[in-house]
Image 1 (cartoon, one colour):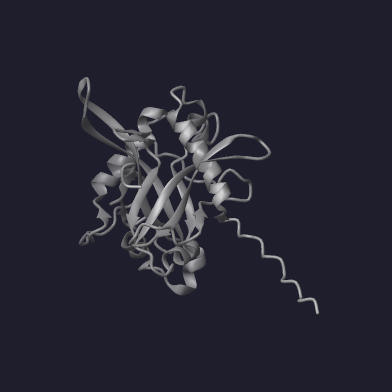
Image 2 (cartoon, rainbow, N blue to C red; image 1 turned 45 degrees about the vertical axis):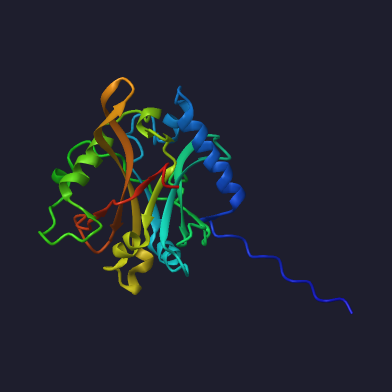
Amino acid sequence: MKAPSSPPPAPLPADIITQRQYDEYAANWVAASSDPAGTVLAQSFQLGKKEPLLASLCFPARQIARLVSTIGAARIKARFLVKVDEKTRLPHFTAALFATDSLDARISSYYVAEEYWLPKQRKPAAAPATTVAAARPQPAMRALTRTDVPDVLSQLWLNAWGAVTVATPPLFATTYGPLRGYTFELAEFTTLLRPVNLSDLDNESLMLEFGLHEYYRSEPQGEVLVQTFGLLLKLESNKLAGGSDPHVNMAKPCPPTC
C-alpha cells in the first residue's frame, strides 16, 4: 500500500531567508564594499536623490523575541547584506540577524530587516541633520546598565553618520579587511525587550541605527584619523514618547570576530 505523501512545506515568512539567499546577498555586500569605485555601495544607502542617507533598519519586536528564544543561543550576529530589487534592479543595504551557540555554530534561521524600499513598508528614518539632543526631549537621569551607551556617545556617532552624504568604501574598511557586520552578546538584545509588555509585542520594533566611530589608527603612513561604520541597538516604543529608550552598542566587529 502506497504511503500517503507528506504535505508540501509551508512558505517561509518574508523575514526569513534561506542559506542560498543569505550567501547571495552577503556576496553582494562583499563585492560592493570591496569595490574602490563604491558605486553600488553608495546606491545601496540612498533613499532618494534629494534625501539623506538611510540611517536605520527595523526588526519587529516579535521577530527579535523569536530570535533570542533560540535554545542554546549565546550570541546574536548581525551581518551586512545587499539585496537587489527584482523589479527596479536597484541595490539596497540590509542586514541579517542570527543566533550562534557557545561553540560559534549557527543555530537559528536568518532573520532579515523590513524591506524599507517597498511601498507597503514604513519609510525608515533618514540620517539626522541636527543633533539628536535638539531633536527630542532628554530622558530622565538613570543608572546605565552594562550594555547602555551614554547619550553623549550615541549622539556623537549618530550625528557623524548624519553628516555623510555618500557612503564610501573607507567608512567600512578595517585593518582586517572590509567590515562584514558585528557580533553581540545575547544579553544585549534581551535587555532591550525588558520594558515591553506581551500585549504590546506586535507594536514595538528594534532599530539598528547607524553611526560613525571616529578615532586614530596606526597605518603604514603614520597615525591617521579614521571613521568606521557602527551599529546602535534601540527599542522603538510606541508608548515611550520622545525616544527615551537607551541605545546599546557593545558589539565586536567582523572581521576579526566572525
